[in-house]
Length: 443
Image 1 (spheres, helix red, strand yellow):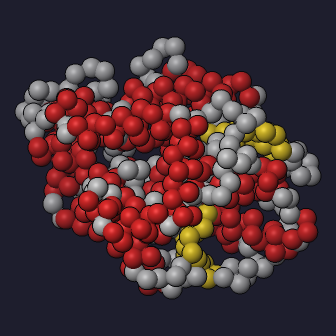
Image 2 (image 1 turned 90 degrees about the vertical axis):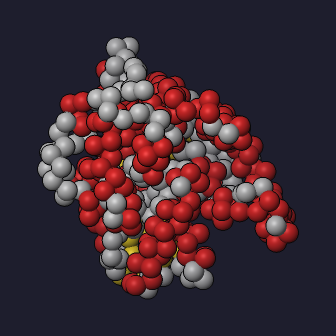
Image 3 (image 1 turned 180 degrees about the vertical axis):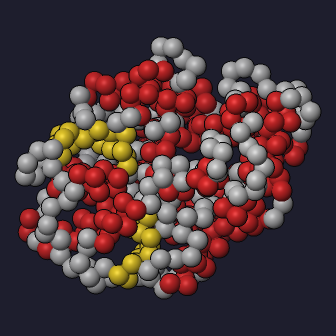
């Protein structure tokens, strides 16, 4: 069985690979295994073999390698031939999912249906699930289930270790509007996110405050939703397109100048809606126009500038490059330049800052062994520079590193770039800081 339309990996992309091997040292799974098929060059060869009918789509080796890849895009950033690897992997995963879905165990199909078709498609349902998790955390039910072995019996032990602390107050997009401080420069559409708005609501709130500081009116339209990244990375491109349409339409109605995102993985997908709808004549042009207005919050704040008024933060930090920010979006300097503006902050660069931590959406659930190896590697690199705080720009990375640091017994805090900026402004003039309650909706 070969690939069948739609969503076929494009031949003009995989034929660009000249097998030079420059991608291999950047690939997390190759660095860990030193196995040719566990690197981009080997996986591209497998995709080409299926396309040409020399390898079965459902062969165990092909299925495994399409799943083992983190889709971190590190190979794209160094490829001299310009191979857009993501445009190969995501359709290939979709092809595998379509061909093997009926043969998957019932509990896997049920979990995919619940998470991908229901929870991440419906923000109200996501908040309901998050509320249940928040109650269980406050009552100590998670600890009880862990101690009694119930999580192990249900095969949820590893998932529980990775679950974030749910925010006391959710950041719910309900057509709120916040006014710029000083001279107005732009109107920013605030993407609340899915995991971000229930587990990292403080980051969303800090994002609003920093956009206001930068001279932006900020709006949070209620029509937005999940960006579709988790579905697309899991081989559910049709579902991903449905979610994408919602965000495109919401942005078009908003009349905002830019679409601001504070989660690197989401931002990468939002910027690639043009590829997602390349074969859809009704949405292709709208998707391209939309993606052209998407900006990561660090990219945007660095571009339009922040006013003076930061207080000193005498902290030692290290910055972890989220894969989909540094590789997919090619943004490495902006977060560091923003951190450099904070008086007293000492930035120590960790080794392999841009090597994937093993989060990659739901990768730590689908490939737990490799995810753990990469997590331990990341934690070891963090410990080498002994920071007080690890700064990053993606919730998945934050959860993965936090779990790894807890397991290692390290008391190191994880914060988003905008949280550090927000803290610096608050340190300069705490009395001027707006109350966060006006920027959120409680559940």
